[in-house]
Image (cartoon, rainbow, N blue to C red):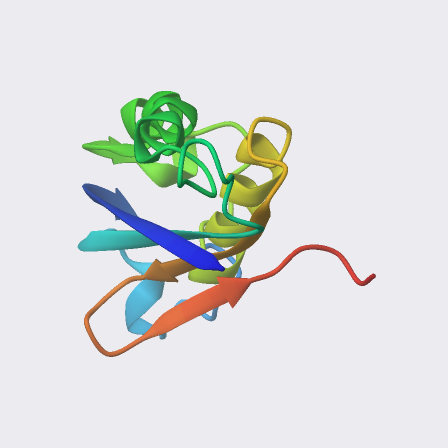
Length: 120
């Protein structure tokens, strides 16, 4: 069974590793949407894979660190591409959510990056 919970935040960033002529080299902002997907069996007693409140609790500190911040200033996100944000989130919530299956980061409604952990 897969379950997913979405989180939203607003943040600014710039991509320092693209050419100066690239429009994303300049500071700009996004309305990010994050989808955290878990995969596991349904507990016969609770009926949950994981309680959604536990997912909120795991993601809450990250949301606080990201929302309305310049992502380049967040330790570990000096090059805050959607791909790097997905990895950053994975690395920080995987210890609390063992059933983590993937993290999807939407920069816009039409573009996203999805990370499903290191090669197995």
